[in-house]
Image 1 (cartoon, rainbow, N blue to C red):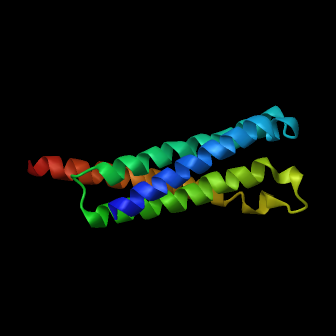
Image 2 (cartoon, one colour; image 1 turned 120 degrees about the horizontal axis):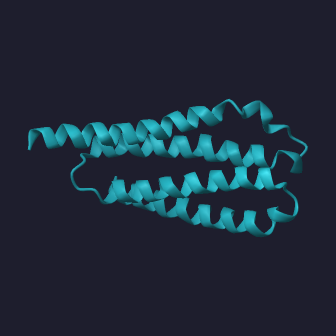
Length: 130
C-alpha cells in the first residue's frame, strides 16, 4: 500500500505542476483573472493532497487499513474537487457546459476533509494508548 500511495502522490504532484504551468502560460491568454484564480485553486489543493499522500505513505504509525481509507478519500476528493474546478474554470473553452457538475466540488471537499479527519482520529487514538 505504501508504494501505491507514494506513487500516486508523485503522479498527482507531477500533474499539478504540469497543470500549474499550463495555467500560468497557455490558459493565461484565454481565461479571465477570476477563472485563472479558480484553476490555480484546483492546482493548489491537488498539490497539497499529493504531499499529504506522500506523508501518509511514509508515516509508520498508521496501519494498512487506515492508509487505504485515507488514500481512497484523497484520490476521490482530488478527482472530484480539483477535477471539477479545472472543468468549471475552463468551461468557456469547450462546447460542453460543465456547470452541471458543479455540485461535485463540495463533495470532493468533504472527502478531502474526511481524509484529514481519519488521520486526526487515528493519530489521537494511538497517542492515547501510549
